[in-house]
Structures are given as structure tokens and as C-alpha cells.
Image (cartoon, rainbow, N blue to C red; front, side, top):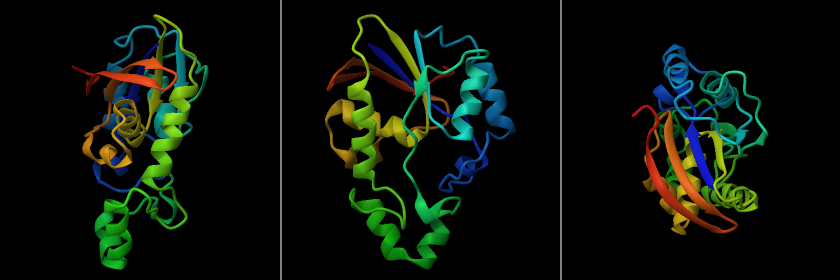
Length: 189
């Protein structure tokens, strides 16, 4: 299988470096996603994460296409949803520092990086392994990071080392616990 993971288009939270809430795409994000329509081919299977930003991206990139299933959601930011890291650093620097350095630390009421990478990896490994099938999943940037870390067998902390901007496209090949990173870059290039 060739699995394409497309990070959703820009939102106000992404532009302002805030933890996401369930916000829609902003004007620039809608325009950039619409410009991708028809440029990613016609995948055999489509999955979409449940957030408004992922659904909005999928609708614009693949007009008229209905998702075959649900892709993993981004990590749950818990009480940090919609908040900027700078504000959190002023309120509780120890909690933010723990989250930034310990893959097992989680935001209050949220999900740790280790749990997120494991959840994304489990989803990937459960996908049907079919030769020459192309699947596209529209997901949050942390899902792309987690998928790359899982594919490389690099451990959860490696997810922090993967830069994923809006509309980044990761292409992975394989399945059933054996994945390879084929490419990672802007979908618009």
C-alpha cells in the first residue's frame, strides 16, 4: 500500500502557534486547499480525521469525494486547547517543560506524545495491505509526525524532530507493521 498523509490546511490556531481547538480553516487555508483540488490524483481509499479543519481540507482537496473511513485524530490537548505555549509557560512552566521533553507527559486531561504515536501506529498497522493501492488520509500535523516516527521505528520523541507545515504530504509505503518513508514535503510543490 502507498499511504499518503496530508496535513490539513492553515487555521488561525496554526498561524498563531496555539494548541488546536476544533477550528475551521482560515481564508488562506481554504484558498491553498482549493488550489490542490485534482492535483493529488484519485486515491482508491480516503480517510479523514474528525476535526473541522481536516474535514474542510478534504472537502476542498477532493471535491465530491466521501471518506471511506476515519483517520486518527490529532493528540488531545486537554485543558490546553486553544492556548498558546507562551501563556502556558507563564502559568505552569514545569508542566509545559515536561510535555516538551518527556514523551509520556500529557497536558492536563490530554494525551501524551507516546500514547499518540502508539495510537497512530496501531491505525497504520491495521490498514489492509494491498499491493498498488493508494490511500489518502487528511489528518492533523501531529498525526503526520507520529506516522513518520512510527514508520522509521524511531520512537515517540522522534516525532518532535519532524517539521510538518499545513498541507505537508508524507508518502509511506508498506503496511502491517513494516512501513517505509518514501517522501515528505509540501503538497503544493
